[in-house]
Amino acid sequence: MTQLDLLVSGGTVVSAGAAPVVADIGVRDGRIACISEPGSGLSAEDHIDARGLHVLPGVVDPHQHTGVGNGLEDYRTDTAACARGGVTSAFYMTMAPNALYTDVLAVQDEAAGARSYIDYGFHPVLMSQEHLDELGDLRERFGTETFKYYMHFRGDEGAYLGVSGTHDGRLYATVEAVARVGGLLMVHAENPEVVWVLADRLKAAGRVDLAAWDDARPPFVEAEAVRRVAYFASHAGCELYLVHITTRESLEQIRNCRVELSGLRLAVETCPHYLTHSTEDPLGSIGKVNPPLRRREHLPALWEAIFDGTVDTLGSDHVGRSVSTKAGTIWEASAGFPSGPQLLPVLITEGHLRRGLPLERIAQLSSLRPAQLTRCAGRKGDIRVGLDADLAIIDLETQRQSDPAWLGTFADYSLYQDVPLSGWSRHTLVRGTPVVRDGDLVGEPGHGNLISRPTEVRA
Image (tube, rainbow, N blue to C red; front, side, top):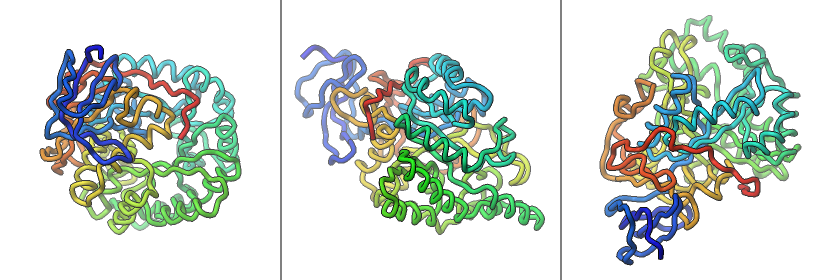
């Protein structure tokens, strides 16, 4: 065999659907060239000793936001932070309320390509007929077949982002259009018209606590919207991906829809913070996110859905805003917080170490399934010969807190900054190149590439 570029030796290799096994991984030209028994005599120009460590496929985070903290510099700071958590690919919800995505994605690709430490892709948010008309061009130019829709941007709900109000007719037209191009529609499921009524009552009562945000957007508001969009998707033949599902009621609707709606193709995501935090935690406006953190009674149902397969993926819903945007009451503070770097450590700490979630299931949730759904499973998401050598080499034993200064993200706070987590990446490889090595950021901004998504790859 021709000499390898890099040899990762002696680690416990974890891939989805297979028992972990100690093996050596050889890398050439950015891809996995071989997986061999330890001590098989392979030679390489570079070497990482992974004995005592676990080698997982790099995290494919299907759900991040960028540009809302420090503009385009988020591509530099936040991807560096995510690499420390073993994230090797991230997909960004990209908004263009008054422009075409054929123009906007070219600008975003150039910005990310100059700054990102990890590979990246985009989910255009569909907000107009003009966006629907360009779906074929996006597929041809960027390989884009994954799109986002916000059901709750009705009335002036999205006015602060320059988004005009939507309605069920536009939702159905979007479902039809995405189905015609064989795409995947990612949906934020929520009924805002009920929220308006409930929020007015709570404000009149003087409620400003974190639980008031949940009470204004109670579980049935999400569950009803889940049922509605699933019915539309089934009728139109559109593949549907429900982002950030949070409640027991929504999970019940999802299970029912999968049985009752003929031909429905439905994938489900939840997020790390819904598995660890609740309205009972003393977070105040720091904990404001949409959908809300729920009462603690919903956490067991979400973990059960992780174990039984109801939930397909974890997405971080990362937003790199600073803590200053959380000022004011629960009604005034911004929604969202940084969470990308913690996705894998939360699954390791709370899932594997605390609840016995198998590592191969974690690899499926955090890598393989999101890669399949985002149409990049031909390159990403698993440890197999021929795939990109995207690896998260983690230490199960060592704990550390999510110190914002160490992470280096623009956001100067974290829900987990006082919570010790295991499973941080000792070494992170993106296409065979160490971006994090021995716990230190060693990669270069601009190493990340736009993820190739051949149209023949399907979930």
